[in-house]
Length: 323
Image (cartoon, rainbow, N blue to C red; front, side, top):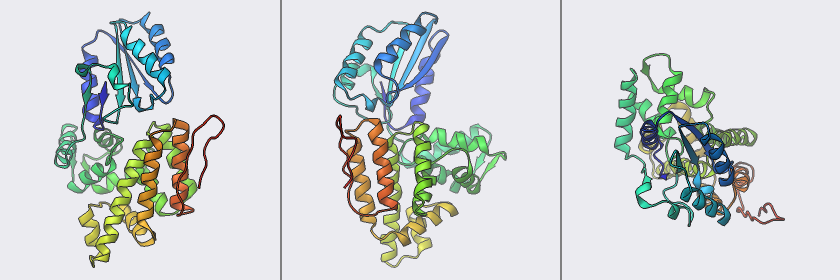
């Protein structure tokens, strides 16, 4: 069981583990899409034709039903020695009854890197790949992976993949963030600042299709709005906008423009933060379908109707209600 937000170190650990197996066949599944029963069927089918099989089961925080937990317990207990089951989550803890299935010796938590470690990691990775990267570009990449979802390693890999020159500047990173085929939280944040509800929904759905969890989207939005709140408070104390942006650590012209737009047009930043926090609480007790609907409603309240509160209920005959 591999838990925690630091995806880069988690992937490196998993790759080393897989490298110890003879001719491994690796398959990745997502808990919100594949049940434990389907996972077991997949295992039995593949185990017949492979020396060793690795089943990576991601987003284990979605394992909530008693039946799924019981099936996972049985599967782990009866698992064939030729099969490596790896249960993953970006969370550091899982629903009651899931973590207990694995003994302590088979659980590992990958905590997020300290800020100083992040900058060193990005610079070292770029150097190893033959790139020189400017400090402002490093900070922008760190912000891209901020709060959590996507690993720092994945972010810097994607930036390097779209830069043709061997010298990476802030402009290169901004181009990747706002103009590449990858949808990012920055693009969603920009559409929120523009009050563009349809485009915000499009980016959100793209993030979901890329297996971005609802938890991570909410967490990262909260981080972004917290920055805007700090900018507003600094402005109220007489700090210039340029100084406020620098003090909060907002890099890149486009990102700065987005934060300035929100800081100058948002009438109630406290409301925005409170309703994002409400969404975070609601997500913990909802199935995936309702989690996605909750975030769509969250965008609606942040853009179209900035008042009221979220109320999402789950039952057999009621999908959700909104107040």
